[in-house]
Amino acid sequence: MAEFDLVIRNGTVVTASDTTKCEVGIKDGRIVALAERLDPGAPTLDAGGRLVMPGGIDSHVHIDQYSGDDTVMADDFRSGTVSAACGGNTTVIPFALQVKGGSLRAAVQDYHAKAEGKCLIDYGFHLIVSDPSESVLGQELPALVQDGYTSFKVFMTYDDLKLNDRELLETFDVARNEGALVMVHAEGYDAIKFLTERLERAGRTDPYHHAESRPIPVEREATHRAISFAEIVDVPIMIVHVSSADAIEQIRWAQSRGLKVYGETCTQYLTLTADDLKGLNMEGAKYVCSPPPRDLESQKACWNGLQTGVFQVFSSDHCPFRFDTPAGKKRHGERTAFKWVPNGIPGVEVRMPILFSEGVGKGRITLQEFVAMTSTNHARLYGLAPRKGSIAVGADADIVIWDPEKKVTITQDIMHHGADYTPYEGFEVIGWPETVLVRGTKVVHKGEVVGTPGHGRFLKRDLSPFARPRGVRPTEYGA
Image (cartoon, rainbow, N blue to C red; front, side, top):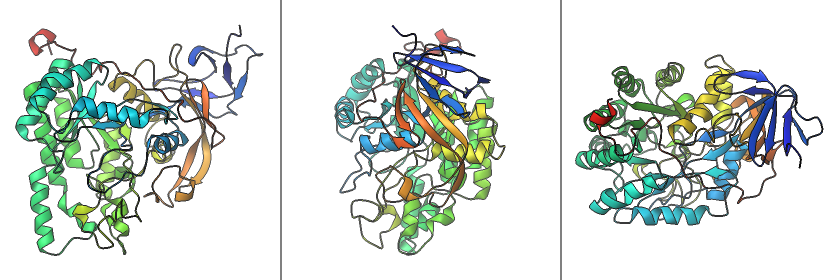
């Protein structure tokens, strides 16, 4: 029997802690050896002097998610995971959304059915709790956490998703008891409702005014409130898609006090501004997401958050809708008021190239920090380590061979997502994934999709080591 199924040679291996020139031996889908020289007779993948890194993990993506009314998300699990793979990712964690009045367990079963046989890369599910009924909090949610769905998201805004303060506290308490990690969309519902209605009365309904309906204080207040509730309950939380200096300062304050508050920012907050929401013929709708892109000072603040450790992870918040179709951004016509425009933009395919080019390429972050924020920290936070997120003996052979010199202009015609546009049209990057392996099997090679949908496996996740152990009360845990 051959010692290796594949050996990756002639590459520079980069992890979250080290950079070294070595060969990577793969057997049965796992990394089994790292050495200066491995069996010269083994099947070889020549990295051509490029970087060999852990495949990306995008822990915040929305795929084939129910959007209400007649709106249809642009990606199913086939196109969504193909797009992710072409961007250097080997794992995604989308959401299983509970519809109000429905069963959380049934929602999970529904999303499994949507994903079955379609995924090119590995995947897990976060839960979305929109209706924390007695049965959900008392039975379904604890059982699902024990079954390996060890993180869930709650919303402080949107008519059909928001939880009130009491519901947030009760849901946080279940997470504390079960050892789950809570992701929080922190924007205040009532403030947004008030501002939206005021803008409507003034006739200010173009997409640009979406940003005015959700200004920075709305994010700051909700972030502070979420942190306060987490402190009261003593539960770890992740504030997702942070966009502003004010929210960053709230998270920094919490972290300085030793609270288990983590942060995430996304591609759009490093590259886009509210001015992108302007434009004729509803073009600004292409950039409608929440929180909205802000200004150059906010971009600088988000970079600072990445550089100083306020943010542990960098995600895409990939949430794709088609622009020029009645089922997407223009679902209410050419002059749709901003409040009816589906919130979300595509981005899973460009997350890693943009951060590499703008971060590593421009000296803002190191290679090690790039790997940590695009892969390793996601695995650690969401219960996938040590299986995922590193190049180490025993880990899955989830690997991206990265060309750090390749220049690419991002355009819609090179994207693999289901949307009919990219909000990063014309953005120039240096650094692009060349070959992607999922458990030792090439799914992308020389930029071409060579894998078979269905190769991706569902990942049952462990409890996050950053969350409190299941069933341990604060006085027992000593923290």
